[in-house]
Image (cartoon, rainbow, N blue to C red):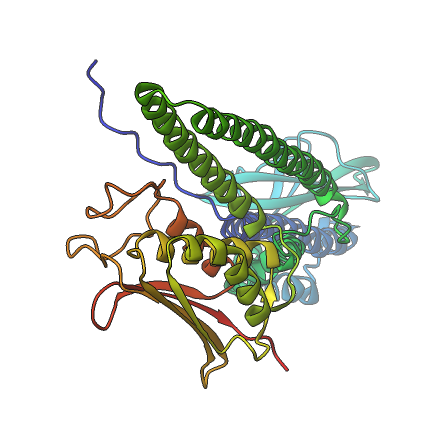
Length: 467
């Protein structure tokens, strides 16, 4: 089946960066909204002020109308036009008309669409002579030639000053918005850090926990993180149950496998002792050898599973490395005596305290001594030496004069890896792997070195406890 090109992994999103960009984008939108809001408010404010001045001016002009014998008299107050001119370089237009007839002022000046009152002016906007005007109109009743006439006064003014005021105000708003936008970046980063800080604290609290600490999580967290804390506690509870089941399975498997194999081997050895038939004795010997290999492999696999399980779960306790090495040495002494192998021990009479799991260290020591005995010739010698270095390391060296290390395989700690010169020796390829994993779990090291003359030296180093 032909497979297509591998899919690209999705980029990991940073919540902190995401929040910072969102805050910055929101600030930019607020700046734009501020600009249009200020411009709209400035235009309304300037128009309101212009209307107020224009309304006062048209009322003042209307109050200057009076009747005379010869007709109408109009006094254009200078103060009124000065007041209108104070708005800026504006152009001013006016007209006085009786009905549709223009009395004085500018021709075709736009008239109001509705009849203005005589107290409050009417305002509107219109185009006149290429300019946009703001106009106000008011009516006055005058007795003229023995009849009452309504005179409409219209006063218009260009809007240049109003536009300048609105533009200047909006420009000021733009500068203020740009200053806010310049501060938005650092403020967005600070706000993002403040929002993410509870998540960082939660992560730090989880990281500080040891691998064997499976208690429910009680760290205070914001309301939004409570579902995450609940899910984390649920995961811890399931993990604790799974580990308990794994531990129960390991010990149950060890009991179920070791006991029947021991019983079968005992029965086979008894049958070998009772029979005299050469063929049967040969088959029984092969059976005993196969049972021994199976028992050893099962023990090694179970020990390896136990070490893997306890590596992340053990509670460190003070362990006398020297006393534990002496105890393991005494337990393998009968095997050495059967093969007339001499065991030389040095440095096991002084206590060497390390912090760790006594059961795991015991399994590692047993595998080291078992390897030394396995690969030593009959009537050989094995040297065990324990010493403390200047950098507070307890170093145990186990040296034999066996077949040594194969030149093509300098590292034999890989799982199920055996030396090319060990094919005729029973083994599972897990013993040295167990030792290396125990050393790593305790912050130590394990190495294999060629012997001074022949054979090999296995060196297990563990840090000493603080005094």
